[in-house]
Image (cartoon, rainbow, N blue to C red):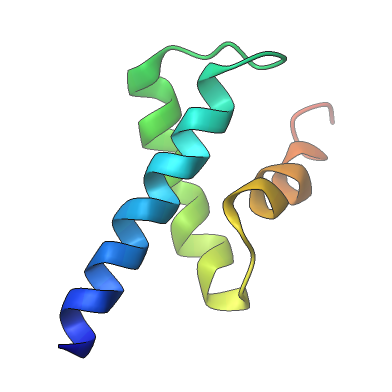
Length: 64
């Protein structure tokens, strides 16, 4: 049961992150957003970040 809940949480988190990235101000293509969300998930979920928090934290490196 715990594994099922973890999978559902992962799926929800990834969809939420991708949904944020395909909308304004990002406007990323769906495939790119989904791929990037997977990378963010591995880095930030273990730290307890939400999808939007992870994007904001990682965004500082986009402009560097």
